[in-house]
Length: 374
Image (cartoon, rainbow, N blue to C red; front, side, top):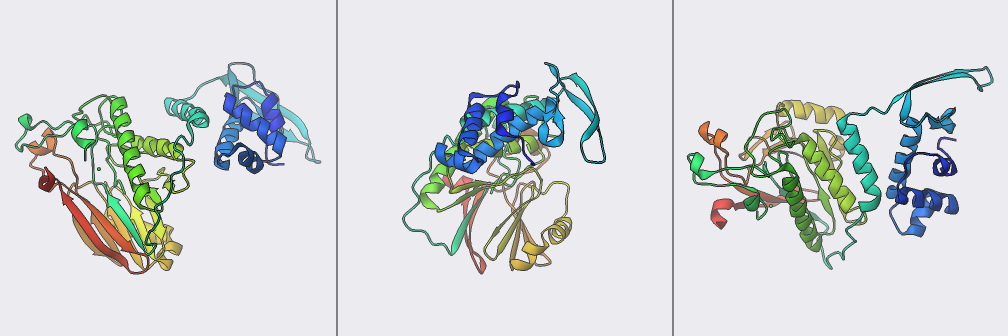
């Protein structure tokens, strides 16, 4: 037996949400996660995640009967270390459970909070009707360069006349990283570099979420399937992960939306005869990316004849071919902030959409220049 009996989890004296209790009772009544999900009219992944969280809480409390752990820790304590001595027949001879007060770092607490909320907010967006006609031979890719959402660019403090704040950003839309300008309420990048911001990080995140929701809903009206890719940048490594997690929960019941998990700086997506690799482009050379792809995606590499790597970071468009992979850095829609302006940086502000054919690769592209639509 490699799982805890749901009856044990239900009876165990550990914190459980009402939704977790509902799921456990359904699994007990109908006999499996799949049958319970079908009866409740939800995705099985919702039940799997919920019960996995309860199992994790049980393990911290020292209870995992399928692992020979049956003694719950005292209230307010968790299992720090467990040592078990077994007899020749496999039964437990002796067992020591060292307990310590609950102690988790802030990231673990935030993740636990998100996991707990997931039971109640998963799948708020109901499935929508797909378009009547689509051409399945083609795929459209909308590339968002370094958007730096939340950045403040005041034309009074720099050479050019371009402003940028959350109001401007929310009026303009694969995110190749640095969608957010700051990664924390300390108004710094992931590495701790101070940056100019327009507003509070919470408000920025809320507005960005609303923007993505509008974009995804609009794309669902036109496309059969929507794949959301948020690359982790050097400004927003953590915020990019939070954004993807929230979008995955929001569209959990929409089978036409797939949010790629972005735990790694490297992401990839395979479509027919095309292999797409994504990286922000910071602190790495094209040749290093190519070597990593050949080493780790050898099966996908050999199967797909059209290979592309999409990057951001340098804030202007640049393409080059290395081996048999096309590398492209994409420009940014944003104006420069004071530091970049003072340092002499600047580039055309634009966004590009590329259409790919399932067999022959890139077919066409459309570029919109910000200055042309002002």
